Length: 132
Image 1 (cartoon, rainbow, N blue to C red):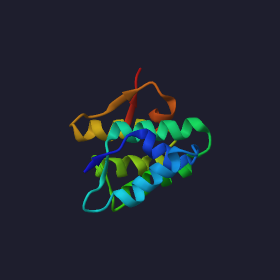
Image 2 (cartoon, rainbow, N blue to C red):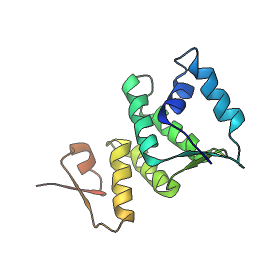
Image 3 (cartoon, rainbow, N blue to C red):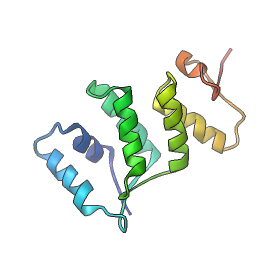
């Protein structure tokens, strides 16, 4: 496996750099394979979503499609993919950020009973308990 940095994914997705975009896209499509996949860890994934959202070019539905695409790609391995998939489902129907839902799923997998939050959007999810 080959670890992939956030910037490689962002340049390939955003197509915003005339030099790095084609290099990143070629790397992802031609260098990686099912036999030698790219590895996307959770920090990279959360940073990618934050970066893509911050540009203002991708809305919530498009961000969800990016995450789903990474999960479905044969040449990409996403760290703790099952937890990422559950967080994605919550993100698609809820109002909180993707990172919030991933935090809650990671916490549940670690055996916590709930995740407390002061984030109003996250507090509306059964995955969280509002801090009071």
